[in-house]
Image (cartoon, rainbow, N blue to C red; front, side, top):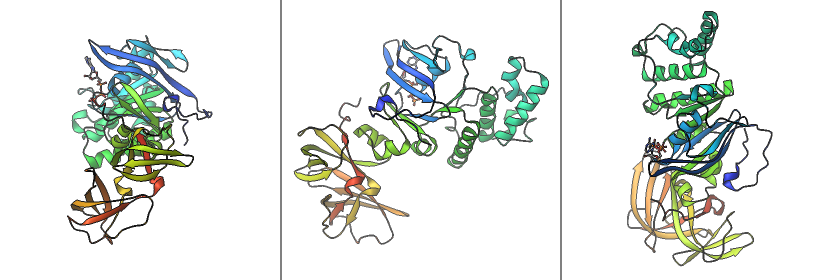
Length: 379
Ligand code: ATP
């Protein structure tokens, strides 16, 4: 599935025939003196799986709560299908939320928990029975309808919580770290199930997670947040392969950031000066000679050799650490200018390097990305 890049990235991508379902327009939120959101704008598309990712305290939950109607923005508007819903109470929006802590009614069995919202809406017994049956099948809990929440595992309780939200046929399901309380194996299984449900229902999911692998594996788009703003919004591939800033490159995946300056800007790329060594690099950024920049090279794309190499993108250094980690070896190399870089190499056929050796590093020009150095201003 292809999703148009939103305006926030600055890229001019044609908005395909995907329908905008939700628009956040210039949202600000101030709690006492603390500014939690500082101008958040984003279009969310019909049927999309969008993940909000970012460090603790960057404003993910606040954004979700404003969409749900649980919090009023200090400024800005929320549009659903073009209609201003900023002041509507939660129950009047076609938006439901699943939290990490399930929030099931402990004294009601699974069926009653799932049917609760429909009952409040005045649905008939028959309607509730049919809807609950469908939901139990969807979350693969047929036969569990009469159980009490206390008789379920954490994963099963979370599935009931999801069924309870989906039974109301929301236009958007908001999920705030829904798998955060589950162990890793169950979490991986539930990720697949959630994705399957989202695809089969075609409902828009807005998802919060701290787990990068979860974000990369499940999302159509990821909105990366920092200090109450979106810093980059795009497909998982775009964020991993073409981060725009050092923050984005280092927050998603493991990367080496070589600090340097643009020595020359050419038609087909940039020559970067890293500690007196000139390295060719591709760039889609608007760069002027002398600009301070970082060259981002993923650890798994930085190759190491015991013998000198002739590649145009190469550096040499001293092997400072070499750690065996099963299928791969994690090597730390100190460069002459004092920077340290990490290389993850398959252990099969590895070069015979030991700590203290001079080693040669190289990479394909296309796998390194020039990014703006925005880490100095980190809080
Ligand atoms: P986490 O990943 O830790 O859950 P988050 O990205 O979801 O964090 P928010 O919960 O949205 O972050 O919080 C953003 C900022 O607003 C934080 O600095 C937080 O302390 C502050 N904040 C959130 N809710 C309130 C509140 N009710 N009163 C005061 N400050 C708040």
